[in-house]
Image (cartoon, rainbow, N blue to C red):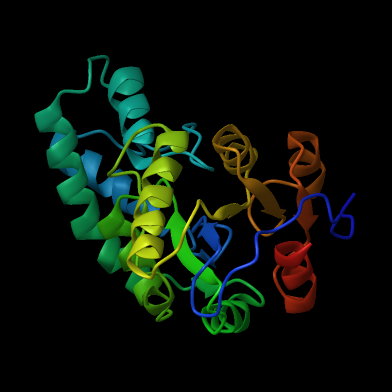
Length: 248
């Protein structure tokens, strides 16, 4: 059951112009839906390189890193370990096809409330917006470019940084903290992880972040609730609710 936000933690105050909050947004199912563009691009890459059809069939994608997905396909369907040269070749071919698939996807869409919320958050000097996604960085930028959303995210952690989602988030936090240090911040920021899968919740919790689950992807609100996020939202259409979470 989706519940109103709970004021469970205090948030550090911040001198004007110095961000005290790092907000890490997942991408697929949280910011946009690409209409299966990533799966199609990966299928085409494996077909080209190995003659393997429907490579992504029966492989879980939600909340995972691109490299983890690629490893599952290579080890499970090609029956061999994932070599570094294979990973590089697959990623290169995947990114080549991803741009085409995203551009022509008939069901690509930005999820409700996202542009307005990102615009509002960007206007707040106490917030730094970043990505925390399993996508390769180049793939993430391709997916966001169609909707002109890259401008909101100057840093992040990506599937090209690490295969493990917690490490992806650690990379994002480190980059966010480097920007805070440049602006004169003293002490660590409060970190928020916003995503649409139990893996987003679990990795955010492992990092010690406050987790906000949104039921806009393929995972039901009930399944998200079982993962135990700090807050569960139907979507991101109510900026006041989101701001109460930040300032709770």
